[in-house]
Length: 218
Image 1 (cartoon, one colour):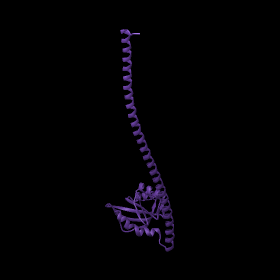
Image 2 (tube, one colour; image 1 turned 45 degrees about the vertical axis):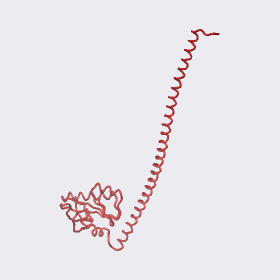
Image 3 (cartoon, helix red, strand yellow; image 1 turned 30 degrees about the vertical axis):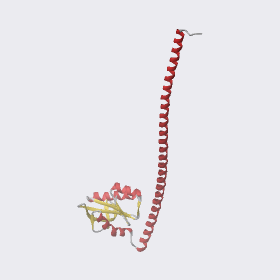
Image 4 (cartoon, helix red, strand yellow; image 1 turned 90 degrees about the vertical axis):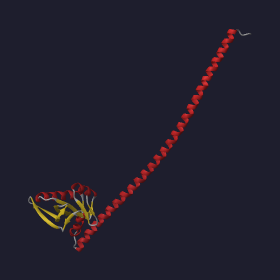
């Protein structure tokens, strides 16, 4: 059967149209392939970054655990040291009773030089009693000195072990004496062992703390 010119033209047109569609599809396929490859590379890079982040996090967690262990050991050492200091305070207290040399006597011997290191010029310290509003107040350590060019009264309390409530009680008495005498006062406490809460209370009350082995200023 022979093809008519019209049929031949129709067939050629259909074939050209299909070829054109196929060409477009291949171009889109190539573009899709390139896009997939790029996404694959991006995913691989992201995966690598996530792995590195996971490793860094793991190392950080290990370091945190190490620090936690170190802190735990430090706290245990501090607790052990505190117990030893308490024990030492008791032993020294017993020794002082045995040889007749009190903690108060030790304070009178040591504190003048330590006060001078802080800028308080003072010759000596003694025990003093005051009668205020009908109440007798005993001060373990009393002296007159010069601090930053001003005349001051040095008032001190002696306790084997100093706690926050001891600091608060002494501060009340010292401030009462200062108001009664109308004088500026320099407050201090002296002991064998000082509890951490006492240090915070003393800093707030502007009270200098000293021990027999090391001076401590708030």
